Length: 118
Image (cartoon, rainbow, N blue to C red; front, side, top):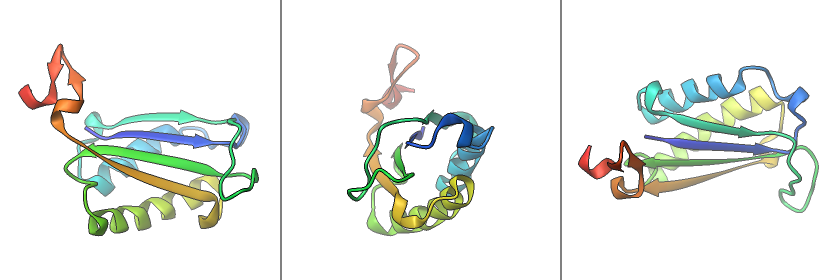
């Protein structure tokens, strides 16, 4: 069950319409998870600084169980996510940061329990 948060200082009117749905589909394909298990939050118009500059930028946080836990996995995910984000947001790679956070099933609550028991 991936959780994806895309923060950007791009104003909402410069974020392509439907980006959250395309990001959901891209994450599902990249991580090999069903699209109906992916959760995406998109926050445009934030006050942000990346690498000391407030020029247009974005930060992506990808949290998931079992698929973001190694450098090798994340290197591959990163390459594909940078390709997607640079195209969609018209930002250079130096203006995007991606963080990967591995989760354990007991850290996610759903249906009155945690994923460990579902």
